[in-house]
Image 1 (tube, rainbow, N blue to C red):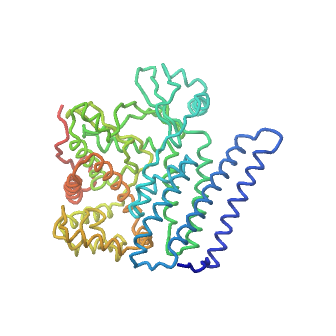
Image 2 (cartoon, rainbow, N blue to C red):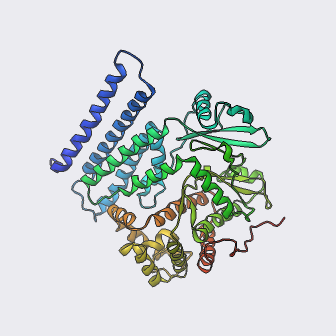
Image 3 (cartoon, rainbow, N blue to C red):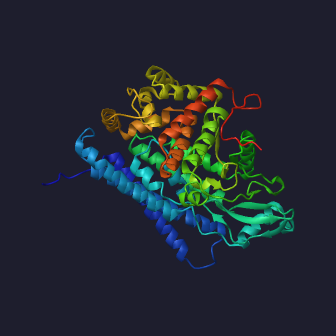
Length: 494
């Protein structure tokens, strides 16, 4: 079979040419700067060079991806079987390409990849591929970290400690953590921000904005502007350790009477925007099943406690931890039921609008009671419009016509499969632009939690029942405070 020659539309051809030219020019400029004679570049100049290199990689990856989609899908009707068979292959190929980009560029690109993977409205090929990215980097030498501590805590900061371990216990995209012991004998974890990280964030987020605008120019039906905006907002929060400390204290106050969760104490006299000193809490990642087996704790009990913790945040407090991945939730063998949960990394929280919180409580009740009319009304209120009929699929895994809240028949599964097939990527993009940020925040947190309990091999019914209980509490009570206490079986009596 002879293929017809393929031509890009003029606007796309011009944009692709500019992208490719920009990437080539950047690489050439960087090579020339790197090979030029003379004085060694300053740290600022070196950071700029690395920024240009990262940008060149990103531009090249986006250009290659656009070409891949264009060539692979040319001539295919979107409602055809061939299109449906081809598009997952292209998604997977391009997702792997972006994963390699994130691994090569490290830093905020890894964070961005993880952020994208946690969004419910992206193709599963992207979410499964990008979710494997690990936010781990080679740590900076202690002498660099020591200078940051001097600037923030004073030149004699070491006088406040009995010891500070020079080898970090963790190193990620924006900071590394060192174990230390105060003169008082308290064990602490010192989170120290990398000195150049804010400059890098500004550079990389500008690149991401530019690329999202470029995709929007080429494909107006794909509106991604909300994605880099949400990511930039999230990253700005992560760089302010004072705000993180405040978030931590608020979360600790919300769960003051709950002995199943521990939030590390903040040492304010040793905390600044770039340095955060908190109580050191030991434990293992929540998904470590070998550890749970070793201490004799049933994974289902741990999963139930996890879901109760976040259900209370969503439906009752209206104050949600924005990054509940396994590394931020530890299981400690200390606790009245043989364990407790340690909640870490309080950089990103979302405070729900009070009316939204109440409406979301009602939505969950409607989903469980299979009240399709109320689901559609509330969906309209949230801005979901015609996509309101998909809310049961998103949150409970059932269709809006389903008679069952906790399961589906073979026929209903087939119906759901066909409904999802009818959705185009631009439909998902339109949905994400239509719903409020509070809704997206819940979807993101819920997606991460579902991933955790799925890997723990715990039934999804645990999540559905727990959410239902707290949705009722949240609707009947104002925000949980001193006047509205809930009797929960996971509270220990001492």
